Image (cartoon, rainbow, N blue to C red):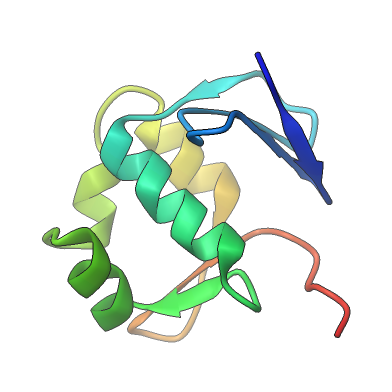
Length: 95
C-alpha cells in the first residue's frame, strides 16, 4: 500500500485504505473514502453536514458508514460534534 503519513492517519492515494492511530487496516467504500478525505483535508478536520452532503451528493452521513468496515470507522475515526458537524478524531493542526 502506498501511504502518506499525516499525524495519526496513514492513507492510500485514494483514501480507500487507511490506518488510524496504529489500528488494523480499514477498507473504505468510495463514498466513505471521499468523506474521510474531505474532512482530512479541511482546516480543522471538520465540516458541516450541509458541506459534506453538497460535495458528496449523499443522504445522511452516518448511512454511508453502515457497510463493510464503516461501523468500526464511524466508532473510532469520528468524534461527536455539535449537531450538524462531523470531525475526524485527530489532533488539531497547528496554524
